[in-house]
Amino acid sequence: MSTGLGRGAAAGLVLACGLGLWGCRRGGEPVSPEPEGPVAKLPTFEEPIEPVDLSPDPLPKGVVAEVDGEPISEAELERLVHASATAMPDVDEGELRRQALLQLVERQLVLANADQMGLLVSDAEIDGALDGIAQTNGLSREQLEDAVVEQGWTLDDYRQELVAQIMEMKVMQVHGLLDSMPGGTEDLDQRRERFVGCMRARAEVQVGDEALTLPDNPYGVPTEIAELRFSGELGLPEDELRSVALDAAKTRMHLCDALSTAELALQELLMERGFLASRVQLPWPGSSVPPVTLEAEVEAGKPHTVGVISFDQSAVPKKQRLDEGELARRVALWLVKGETARLSAMQEASREVADAAERAGLGMEPEVTMDEGKGGVRVDVVYRLSGG
Image (tube, rainbow, N blue to C red; front, side, top):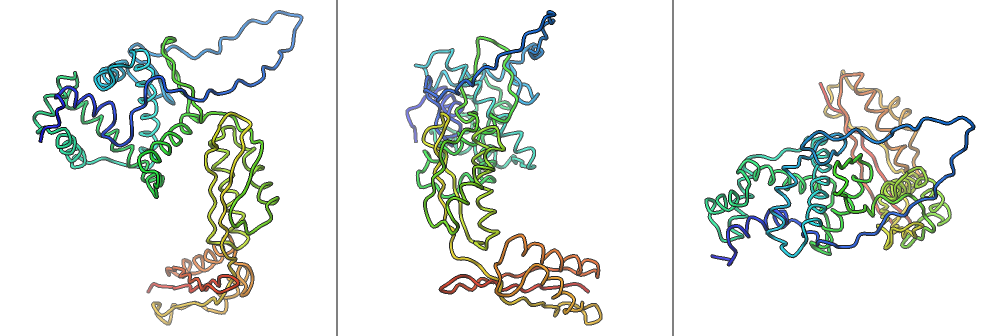
């Protein structure tokens, strides 16, 4: 069925908007500026000092930018600008180049992250994406390939474009950014923007052309928190939670990292106090211009206590079975019935049993059962040994 799109327009739309996975950036869309910090006065010296050139080395010919040392070529930029111009003809070329460069920088960051995690894209996934694009635009595969060539792309380059876009989705999935999105695609766009913005804040990005600048990164703002408020079922005194979160946030340069570090510190504190099913979330603030006010959402849940500890060696030959009295003494160094079930203590107890099993050539898997009551949750643990 025809969509009324010409072949050239269809290809441009696909390349500019990225398979419809998330929306295009609108040219000229304002971005919160990064504030300028105070400039320290330099000391004066009686003897003149030769100036030191701290500017980076110029980029190689044909390279418009480098991201953590990885080049972005002029050819890549021009291809993306050309495709974007087809989909967004009302945006001036200068803004198209800025947005295209930003897209390539963000893509390089995401692909580097994918490489660290060992993610791959198969030929079958690429072919499936091609079939989907062709069907969406009312084209056959042959017509789509013709449209791609008309846009100045080679088929190999176009497939690599699809690889990058599919890889982005895989990275988002691994990081849990595709989970539970009540806001739909708008929610996804915001999550992606924050995710790549935070990666960009940590990266070293060099642009070779002075006339070509990247948009300001609102996620690269320095850490400066004016206030931290809490909502929900806290489980612990608010002042204690606030102190732990702010101390953790102060150790990070950028607000991105400050949020994640503070969130982790709160989660660890609650789990160390026995709230093993607790949930903590520090959403991005409404305004990222420092100093910022943060809103922490906490659901501590019920406190957990240590219940029955037992050992199952039914899968171990009798001659190889371990002394359960000795195992119990090892576990009791960390877990005592009726006391708070702390996450680190449970991990250490499991490590004690696992180490003893390994020395005997056995395997071990802990089985944890939660029994919820009115006042809290009892945690029973069975250490199941195997081998033979």
